Length: 78
Figure 1: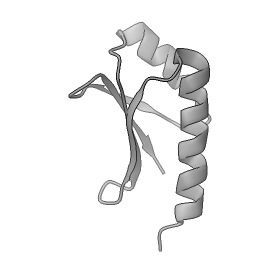
Figure 2: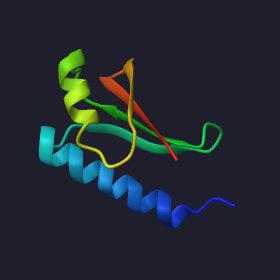
Figure 3: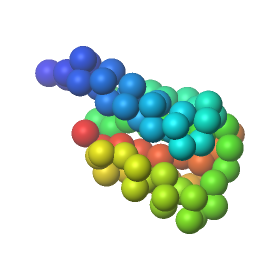
């Protein structure tokens, strides 16, 4: 059974970190049920160092997936 309350809290934490570090630049933030992960796409493209620095700010592991349709993409596996 999927714990949506936990997913929403995690999404709020991700949003808070991104807004504090980069400002409001979230293009898409959603839960992917098939991958059992939260996917984040920014409206800006970060270089590798910036992406790594951002990943270090989260309390859960984050993978930088590269560039999506609008900007840098990250995945948070639950």
